[in-house]
Image (cartoon, rainbow, N blue to C red; front, top):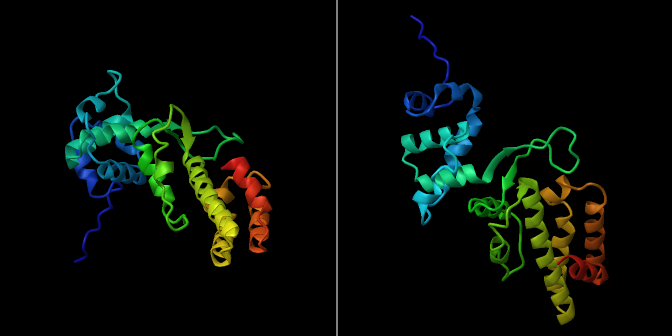
Amino acid sequence: MSTPTTTPDPLGYLGPRLRDADPLDERLLPELPPELLAAAAAEIAATPRMPGAAAASRPRRRTRSRRTSLALALVVLLGIPSAAVATYVGIHTGFFPAAGDTESEPGEEYLDTSQPGIVSVVRQLTVGVPLPAGDGWGPLLARYPAEEGLMQRSGLGVAVEHYARCRWDRAYLRADAAGDRAARERAARVIATSARWRYTVATDGGGVVALYERQGRTALRGDARLLRRDWRANC
């Protein structure tokens, strides 16, 4: 006797619980891909409770968006703090650039940089980006939440890499001034590889990668002029 097969629930183990939940409208489910649901659950669950959570979680309008309804259903099902819902809904605008928009990254949502949840996004983007010994990400993270504005994840990634590159420029120039050849060479090697950092490459509209490659080559030769110029102009 063969064992009957069952079709996996596209929403995973949360599927049955979401369909039984109230106030979630089941008509939402076909519109939401599993990866969006998983990302929403992960981001909401990872958000710490913040002071004033009750006030922050109140909707600004009497009508809730479908995304907000999903987030509220996740709170009911998973016991997630309501402040996390406000953070999740707050940074995600649902605004994507139109096809052919040359000033934006295709398919990337614009995030609201004025919301507290943007800090965790920036912090995630710093992972794997090196800094000189003794340097930290504190000054960069302190810039967020920023004044009201929208930015794509790629734009935030560029900001992270620019911050790190400036720190390596400074490390190189300090080592050069101190006559510390070993430290200068360490910094020069990182500066050279920074031309191939993820968001630097992804957003290069022409000439940016080539410029950083040239700066890296001159730094490796012990010539500090290009880095000194970059530091003064951009850092």
